[in-house]
Image (cartoon, rainbow, N blue to C red; front, side):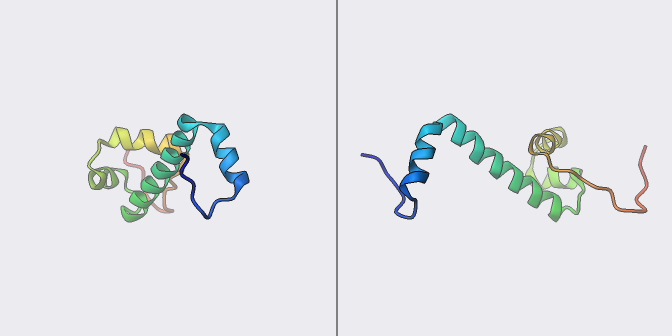
Length: 83
């Protein structure tokens, strides 16, 4: 027996059945990661170190997620480089 949402049309159900579990899982995971990282960075006002501490992950891992999701961080005008 196949479970289907009553809100979805037959065409939507057929297109998702063609794509397979792995592909759909990757798509959903990427959407979650993008949304989560975006919200973290907004809350931390672009501070990656603070966002990583909030998420309880390593800063390097957060940078990997930022690159993976394609999120771009812009520096504010007048902000000095620390290097």
